[in-house]
Amino acid sequence: MEVEAPGLLRYFIGAAIMIAGVVLPLVYMMFRNKRSSAPSSFSKQTSKGLI
Image (cartoon, rainbow, N blue to C red; front, top):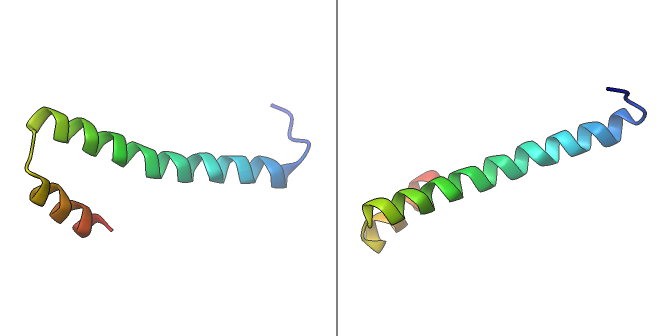
């Protein structure tokens, strides 16, 4: 893989990692909540603990 602009490549990699770090837990929580159908109070408590 040719690296013409290291700064740009670094920025894209960092952005991809940040997006994955934000999106993956959200998708996982949504998927888990759909399957277990936990009460809203429980999901609110866990989200507060994560943040």
